[in-house]
Length: 191
Image (cartoon, one colour):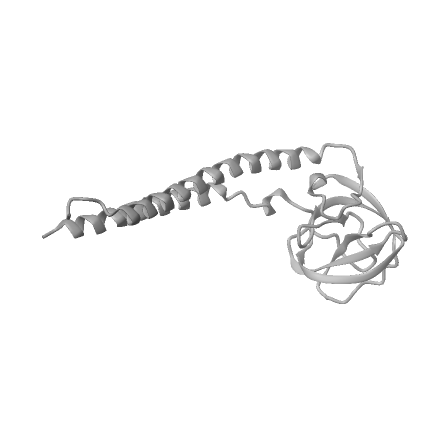
C-alpha cells in the first residue's frame, strides 16, 4: 500500500499545478498584448487630433490630442498630482456639461498647491486624452485655468506592464506545489 500514490491528493495537486501553469502562460500572452497596446499608445502622440470620445470609458484614444468644449463645470475634484516640474500637489479636474445630449466629460484644468477649486467657468479646451479614475478617460488641458500651472501630462510610464513577473510567480507556485507534494510523498514512504 505504501508504494502506491494516493489518487485523489495526486489529482488535486496536478490539477492545481496545471491551473497555475495555465495562469502563467496566460500572463505571458497578456504581456505580449500589453506591449502592443503600449506601442499603439506611443504612436498616438504623432496622430492627428480627434474629437473627445462620447463614451468616457473608451480607452482606445488614450494619449491622442483632442479638443472639447465645456459649457459649464458642474463639479470639481482635487486629487493628488504633479505639475510639469514634477512637484507634488493637487490636480484640479472639472466635470463638464457639454449640453443636454451628451454625458459630459472630465478635464484636468491644472495643478496647484491648494486643493480649492479654481474660478474657471468653462470654454474650449485642448490637450491630451489621459486615464482618469474607474477606467474612464479625461482630457488633460495644455492651457491651465487662471491661477493654475499645467499638470504633468499623461505618461506611458504610468501604465504598468508587470505580466512577466506575474507569470514567473505562477510558475514558481506550480513548482512549489509539486515540490512540496513530492516531499510529502517521500516522507510518507520513509520507514
